[in-house]
Amino acid sequence: MNATDPLRADGLYVSLGGLPILRDVSLRVGAGEAVALLGGNGSGKTTLIRTLLGLVPHQEGTVELFGEAVPGFTDWSRVGYVPQHSAVAVANATVREVAASGRLAHRRPFQWLTRADRMALDDALAHVGLADRKGWPFGALSGGQKQRVLIARALASQPDLLVMDEPMAGVDLHSQAGLARLLTSFARDGLALLVVLHEQGPLAGMLDRTITLCDGRVVDPEHPTAHDCAPATPWESPVGLSDPFAGAIR
Ligand SMILES: Nc1ncnc2c1ncn2[C@@H]1O[C@H](COP(=O)(O)OP(=O)(O)OP(=O)(O)O)[C@@H](O)[C@H]1O
Image (cartoon, rainbow, N blue to C red; front, top):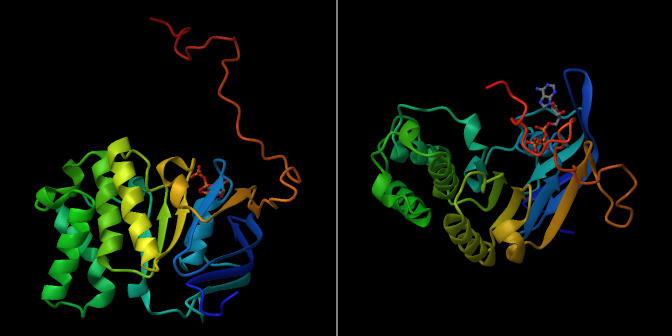
C-alpha cells in the first residue's frame, strides 16, 4: 500500500434523499493500475465515482487523491473525468470548445490557449479519431462521437488519474478497440485508471483488477454470494412473448 496512491477511499458511507446508497466502501487505485468498477443497474457505481471526485458528499469515511483529502484537494489538473455522455448538454459549443474545457485546470481565467494547450488539445482529439470534427457543433454528433469528445476532454488535461463512467457506451467496436489500445499505452506510462463498465469487453486485456458493487457494497471476491447480486436475468414478458411489442394494438 502506498500513501501517495492516486486514489484511495476507506469506509465510505453515502446517503441520498435519506436512503443509504454506499455502505462501507473501500478501494484503491495505484499508479499505472487499471481497475474496473462493475455492478448491476442501481448498485451505486456512478454515485461512488462522483463521491471519489468530491461531487457527492460522503457522510462517513475518507477519500484521498494523491494523498490529499477530498474535500480539500485542489490539483484537479491531475484528474480526468469522463461522465456518461447523456449527462452533458452543451449543444452550441464546438467539439474543440468542449475538449478545451479539459484544459481549464491548467489555465488562468480569461487567457488565450497557450501553445501547450493547443498541442494537448490537438493530440487528444487525434487520439480519439476526431481531429477532422474540431469545428462541428457538439450537439450535431452521434452518441458515440460525443462520448469520444468527452474522452478527448479528459485526455487534454494530461491527467495522472482518469476516472471514466461507462466510456464505451454507444461507441462502435472499432473505436472501442482503439480506445483500449490508447488506454493500455497510457497505463504503461503510469496513468491510473478507474473505469465503470457493464461488461469488460475490449478493455478486459488491460485490466489489473475488478471491483464489483452490489447494493452499495463491495462484493467480497472470497464470498461473492454474501448478498444476492446475481446478474439480472433477461427480461421476460409476463405473458411469455419474446417480442415485448407483440401484444400491442396495431
Ligand atoms: N440524487 C439522488 N437522490 C436519491 N437517490 C439517488 C440519487 N442519485 C442516485 N440515487 C439512487 O442511488 C442508487 C445508485 O445509483 P447509481 O446511479 O449510483 O447506480 P449505478 O450503479 O451507476 O447504476 P447504472 O448502472 O444504472 O448507471 C439508485 O438506486 C439511484 O436511484
